[in-house]
Image (cartoon, rainbow over all chains, first blue to last red; front, side, top):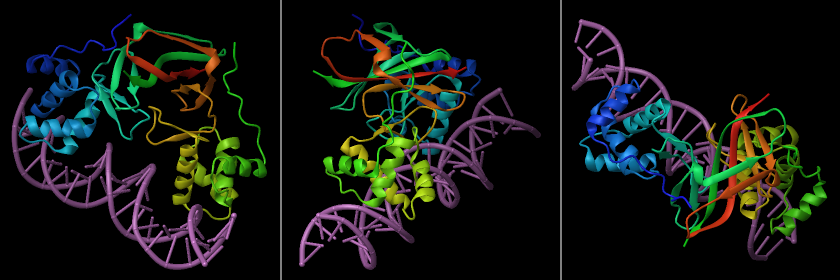
Length: 143
Length: 143
DNA sequence: ATATTTGCAAAGCCTTTGCAGGGGA
DNA sequence: TCCCCTGCAAAGGCTTTGCAAATAT
């Protein structure tokens, strides 16, 4: 019985974030480091708006455009994943980049990560379907 | 080995569509019947824009707003499902309302229905997770 | 006659883009 | 110095909404 929360990166330091960004070929500006601190450590499936709100509280000055640009940059670099779930419009972001699945609480809208190894999927597709990945969304409620 | 295409409703007649709408408590106007003819029979995971384009070709006059309103009405009535897939923004519609899964061809963007019974999913969630449904997205390419 | 639906246009929301100014390498 | 990044504001795409005219029961 695996835990449902995928281990999140321990909150890593600004220096480590800087290294991560540099390793990905991204210039580690103050704004980008701030956004990373939130989306890679602290946040849990935030929307762009939530990232902006956090940045406004914790970082002197950042524009919404820069938030979007930064998120897109991180997604393009593979440090962040975009999620489109059925219960809401718009995108939410997931700092867990290993392949995993999701549980959506239909009452609260909360999203939980589910480790890939706690789900076993046996797909019998026709010939000619080459599979590169699977994403499962489980809907339900949490007692 | 199940076929990958879920059986689509045989193209049903305007009269049958009318009955279906009435059974769902929806007034069967000409516009709604036209949209239903397309999304419930003919179309394969169309976008709203594609529904509008089809309507423009096959139905004298319908506004984009009415297309959206009709699609939303059908979704609310459970006759149609909304799908948000990762490869594109916006919504696509699925006339197959039985529970099933999807295969996304990452090269072409094509979406294929996969019958529920050709996928077996074994989920070991923690206690307290009450499951009401599962949706699997398989990504890959088709040879 | 009454309630519902349609069409048009305008508004809304979220996201991206253009450009000038600013900061890091 | 040079290039990339930032911020602002404007533009963009998609979807919804308001209201008057049209339609169905």
